[in-house]
Length: 162
Image (cartoon, rainbow, N blue to C red; front, side):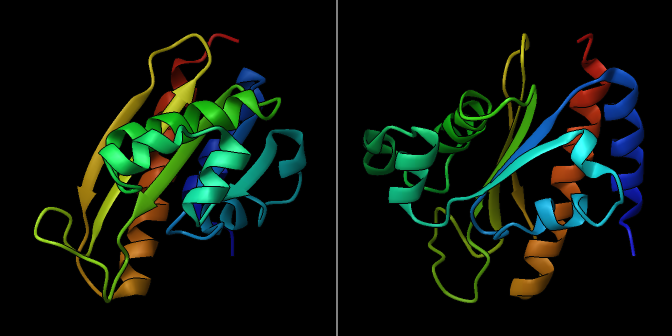
């Protein structure tokens, strides 16, 4: 079954003539999977980067290693760099990046389980980043992140004048 947000995203991306890519960590490619559930998504979906490790974020997307030391993988600077790197390493004009603590372990006082950072980068616009604190188990945290990522892609795609 196609996610209702993907249907809306497909319509906007097609109308605007923009290509989209994803850079995912804690969602493990789930956003890209939802997008590719819709027939014809190859017309507007460019690529999905699943960069679970810091090394993958660095080698595939160009995230500076210093950011992992100074801010950690689950941080605004890292998701901003991931979103920009996804654009630089593809032919897309719009990207979303996601990094978070899905649980059940791995949380801290500063970044509890459910903390997810996302960024959206639309060519010609400022990168937008947002922090979320989702509740529930690992599956529920990831599921909520996917929906927010798609909502953000829709919001950014609406700004496009490509």
